[in-house]
Length: 398
Ligand SMILES: *Cc1c(COP(=O)(O)O)cnc(C)c1O
Picture 1: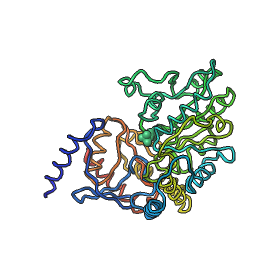
Picture 2: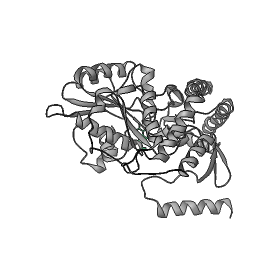
Picture 3: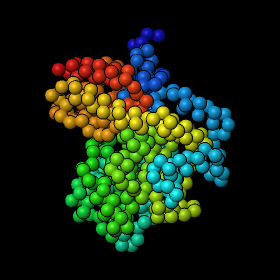
C-alpha cells in the first residue's frame, strides 16, 4: 500500500465509525519513543504536547513498560471489596506529595472529569440549607461529564446539555470578584490554577493566597483542579506549592500514570471527613494495574529529578520562544513545562499546522494561543530540536 492509499483509508474508516464528537485527527500515529512519535508513513514528530500533559515520561519509557507488564502479569483488577499493595502505596504517596500529610485521604477513579465529579459531590457534602453555592471561574475547564461541565466556565460548551446540575456560580478571575462572592453561603470554590484549555492563562498575582484566606475564613472548601498542572509539570509537585498555599482538596489525573488512565481526588484535613461509607465509588477506580503504573511513574519523576528538570527546561524553552524574535509573540505564559504563547494575531491554528508539517507537535487551544507541554524527560537535544522546528513553523507563516 502507498502512503496516500493508507491515509485515505484511515480517514475514511474514522469518518464512518467514530462518534462525531471530535474533528478529523491530524495523523495516524503508530509508535513512540521518548519525546518522539511516528505516523503510519514513518514520519517522525517531536511530541511537545505529550497527549495533553499526559505522557510525563514520554513514550514507551522502560519504567512505564515494566510497571504495566509486571502488574498485568500479577494482578490487574479486583473489586473494591479488596485492597492491593499498589493501591495502599499510591494513597500514601499522594498524601505525601500533595502535602495533605497524615490527615489526607485519596479517592481513585479513571479520568480527570471523574475526579472533578467526586470533588463536586464533596462540595455538596459541605452544603447546608444556607450554604448552597459552588463558585467556579469563567473560562476554566473542568471536564465533559455533567457535573464537571457544570463547573466549566464556558457557556457554549454547557448550553447544548442544559439543564446542568444546579448551584454553580461563575465569577471573573479577579481578587475583587473573589472578595465580592466568597461568604458563608458558599460551599466550595473551584480553581484551575493555570487555565490550560483557555490558552495557558496564569492566575493574577496573589489570587490563590487571597482565595485561601477567604475560603478559610468562611468555611468554604478550596478545591484545586491540578489535572493538567499537577505531578511535577510546573516545576513543583503541584502548582499551588509555587504559590505557597495548600487547598482542602485537589484533583489529579492526566500525567499521574504517564498515559495509563487514572484520576484521584485527594482531601486535606477536615475535608477528609466529609465522605462516608457508600457515598461514592468506581468499579475500575484504584485497581492494581493503574495504581502500580502511577507509583512507578511518580517514583521515576521523583528519583530522576524530573520536577527540577521541568523547571530548568521550562526556562530554556521560554528563552527559545523569546529568541525567535517574532513580532507575533506578545506573551509567554505558564510555569515549568506548561507554556502558553500569546499571539498578536489569530494565527495559532496556522502555526500549529506549520509546526506539524515541520515535525513538531504543539497545539492551539484558541486562535491566539499556543500550548506547549512536552514530556518531563526532555533534555538538551529536544530543546534544540524544538527551537529549530518552531523557527521553521514561524518562518513558514511570514
Ligand atoms: C483535561 C482536564 C480535565 C478533564 O480530564 P479528562 O481526563 O479529560 O476527563 C479537567 N480539568 C482540567 C484542568 C483538565 O486539563
